[in-house]
Image 1 (cartoon, one colour):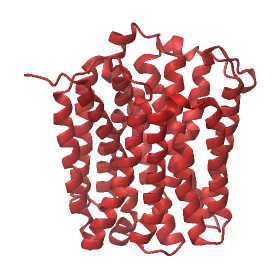
Image 2 (cartoon, rainbow, N blue to C red):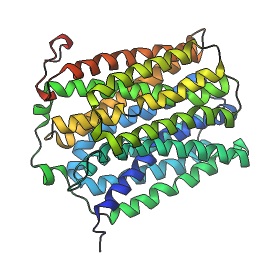
Image 3 (cartoon, helix red, strand yellow):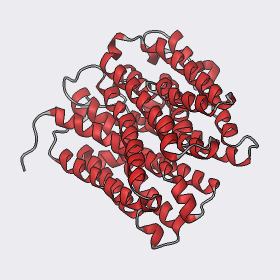
Length: 405
């Protein structure tokens, strides 16, 4: 069967895949109030769904390197789309067939399996594209933000037209997107990192590379900073600040996603002109300020604005960590991207989970939970300053104080 010859199709499909991952991660939290109203699920139960999403992605991150080596990049990419589409369809059906919470759990597990594979497979596919321009990896990751933006806008518009109880039909419509993109990718050209850069270093060799742990901690904190706000800002606006869903989602998650997307787009287009090491500490400090403002402000509007601005401050943290790691450990290969994705998803799991569980017992509610996530911004600033003071070749730096030997 004839395949498309232009690698632009490969890159475009990977961009859409990242947007699909954003839909898979962020659509359920936007439906939390519907789940709570229809199925009487507690805040702890909703928090467990977030934790489950990222725990499953963690498992897929850990398994993905072996999966990709066995079945190849193309098959892995298509399989990820099958999982997301299947999970989305089940999300709208299983809660009405099984007990509601069991149905939600099974559906989210299957969707998250697809999201976990997408997260790992897209980066090496894009990095392996021959003769690509600088910043392509970050440009691709900007589509996570635009996928999130699309999800928020789509949800707001849908519930302006339809009753909240009809949420499942929105989920069915979303399932069409991974089906179309999976078919499109089947016809796109696809090469591997080994074909472009030669044999990758072994997993043992990667683990012995000291700088790898610096990037691992950076991306872990980046994931925690991003998702601690992203997963809860819709609920925070509606329940914590008593705003209507459409207003809360537009001021909160929509603005968060827009600013995060614009930040990543700017870096993807002009990142080669930016001193990445210098901008990372600034991003961390900006995120810290946004967190403190969201928690300490007595103004509901100012708290939401701070949450939205957090999207801008965290926008480049994840793609920058990947970008620098790829440049400084070029032979890291698929295993490096898989382990960095694993670290990022640990952050994505721990960040919003801590916020949810602390909020459930804190007298300050969700603000108390968000306050605990400040620690990730502090660690990120410290690690980015270590990176800033390191030699030009990051892989040669020493980190004795962090006991990473």
